[in-house]
Length: 89
Image (cartoon, rainbow, N blue to C red; front, side):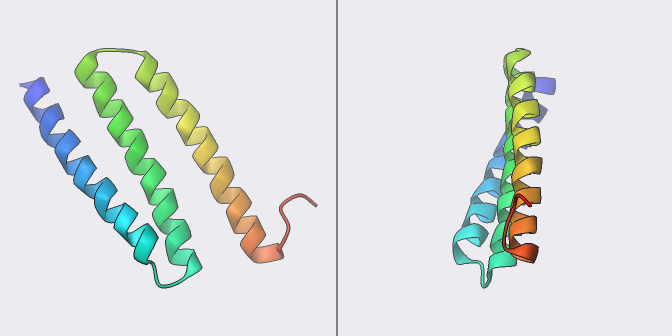
């Protein structure tokens, strides 16, 4: 039963990734595109976690943790760049 639920969730997350990617391309202004990029990496983390559950591998969980850290740092750096114009003071 868990395999079926994970496969359904993989499909739903894949659709969410495609819709978020369309928003990233189409976005009317820069903050919308940054928010779409942030949502894109969160959906990517969810996809990797579900794939790790489906394949029963711990390696995917470590990769998801690395993507989460890099996504957080990049979101903070982009926000600082938008507010102040420079990242490192």
